[in-house]
Image (cartoon, rainbow, N blue to C red; front, side, top):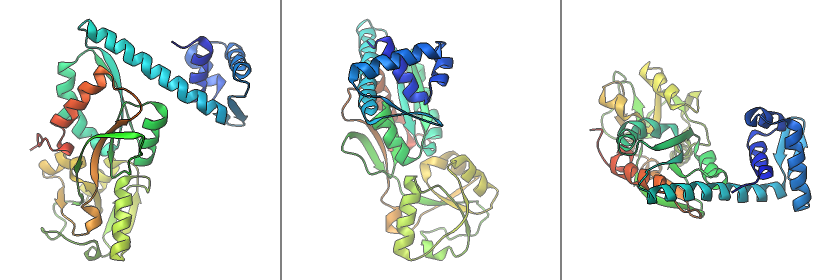
Length: 302
């Protein structure tokens, strides 16, 4: 549905340079440049700003990018729907999620889904909460699994569940079994996610309300790193239980409830764009997420 010029435009917009696009497309850089020049003439505006590190979309280019993105999504959906009319269950789904959802998704949802729909493929990327929302809105991801996010009016929440943030510790660390407050943690070293993550945002709110400052020993965007930090008993961390449920079940980590009200409010949510129709593949996997994932109440990991 896209002509050659817009296909080249899409690749350059995503790669940030003509050279990188040339290597990906196996097309001469000069040919790509000519097609981009044709688009500049067609729209009467330059679609890219050129700078030392490459190329970025101009304001006009951003408008064209959104339209091209929507056309690509519509083409994918049309192809999938035509296949479904023939009884062929094929298609692809682009999923973005926080890392904390990965184990739950792969083990409790995707295993079941892949066996039922072997013709469907997936692209799965991990982002912090803020970047995840932007990716759905601007880059056409089909489904987002997010935690403690303020949902844009342009997103539709398919389903959600409250998942409190818990203190995660090594079993041998001496902590009360019952709910405890942040103010009682003293100088225990903590592993923390960055401020762009919904978990850290809720924790910062709780610290402010409790008038305490936790001791950050390590900051990382990787939940795998946080799990290793706690499993070596180097300190504690704060995560929703679903993100470490297998370690808890294996006795490698323990989860302790917290009394701070700001930490009981966060929700796990599955969101989609409110402006795009969902394909057959997307609708099918949405049903599987709600029916199988621990984060959304299936309880299958117990």
